Image (cartoon, rainbow, N blue to C red):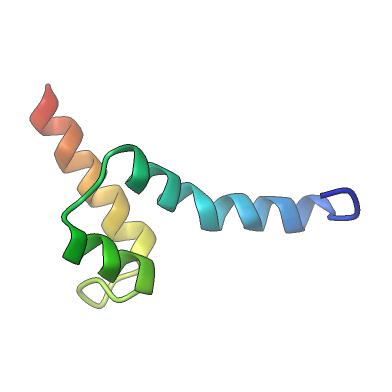
Length: 61
């Protein structure tokens, strides 16, 4: 991180945040593998993760 600029660091955080959320609230193995491979229902993995988290949070309320 010593020589990384702000753009590099923000890009890294954007890529790892969805994974961190997955590991904090795991999905089914098949879904997790598809999200990590970036192939979830033809949508961006980040959109699928947001949807899954929203559904999970709605179920916990």
